[in-house]
Image: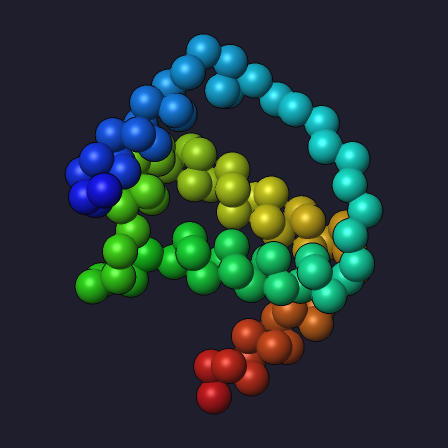
Length: 93
């Protein structure tokens, strides 16, 4: 599929009635998975020039903010915020 076709599919799925309804997810995963998931989501949400960010272009800014907030809350609940910040500091050097 072309990028344009994939974008149309996502746009269609995201517009299905009920997609904006809140859901409660009760899940238990280990801290290692939380830390890795946070890193993956954070990197995916950073749309740098030259990188493919077609899905992010489709999302309203409020949805992207919601994803960022959820990602941070996930890390906070696992007690890994400080560790994540220290790891980011190491990566920046």
